[in-house]
Length: 444
Image (cartoon, rainbow, N blue to C red; front, side, top):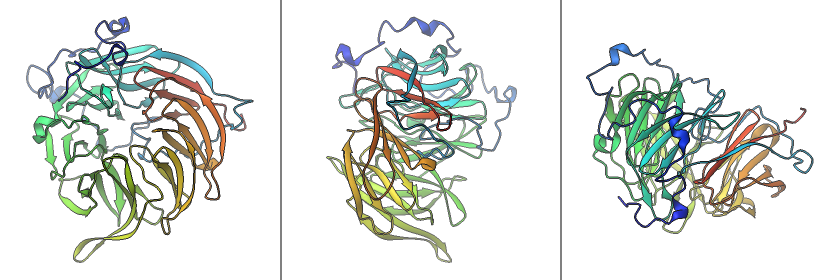
């Protein structure tokens, strides 16, 4: 693992001196080591803890990475698109430590991860004001030359707990109200996996009574109540992706894109269901078409290779996987793509593109947003794009042509973090600051 020795002062905001708000509500057990720490220092306390519900329903406004289904789609939301007349209204802006985490949101609380000097931090803030609520710290620091310092994954909310995965492998289950440690593990040790050069980046996924993370290309499941390891899936090379819950032919399964291609695992026991080879690895999430096919992508040394549609089915002889088409019309690298009305929309390098899901042919390409991210408002046929340089843009989601409707400067500096829209509050951040905006709702 690389150290922070080569960092410049600009790469260390809120570093050694820290910001004094840490003293406002630091959570207990923050000084524990990153080693395996199930249920604290004095033995198994699980009997004293309330049992974790088996259901994965959260009720959160934005429970974690890319929303409730990890697909970047926000149904039931319509906003005003004339930003010259009704621009985003800034609610607050505050410095934040380095990291590429996004947000999880419930009510007036938001959760993210950041680096504070030599500590990897899970932090809770108020949505309405940006005021710190609590902070949990682990003595861990990750840095690499491309992405800089800090954790990469996004917290996950479920049933009053927040689950986080740090860049060196620390998996925490914390009380969402006060940050108290319920249990903690080191997934790198549990799976015998070395920290990859880009750091562990998987956002935790809660399924039934387990939480699942990808230690690079190896899935691992932990008991929600106790943190005890339940299973470790097959080792499948490197990966920057997060586990994705899908249902195919009525069977719930966990998909992970990694260096050898796509792998499907049973959430109950970690057994391999099926896999499809496409060398190169992947960073973004797989997606499903309306009729149940799977969309995957692969990357090379200099960027995205393309998008592939595969048909997966369960028969008497087991699972079958068939390639329908492979397209170079949409080549995601580490940027989102979304599925909408028979088309996929996303980043082809640094430019947005649309492909037809029937044959993979490109319908249009336009607009330059760097290595940005996006979410889809399907009721409005609208993309909300956050560019790499911190600009917000509204783009029409139709297959006939590229149309940018509005653009607005939101945040300065390299911005790779996924935006979050919880109600009418838009949250954006990068490795230096975070900002909350209120968007005017259509009809409001």
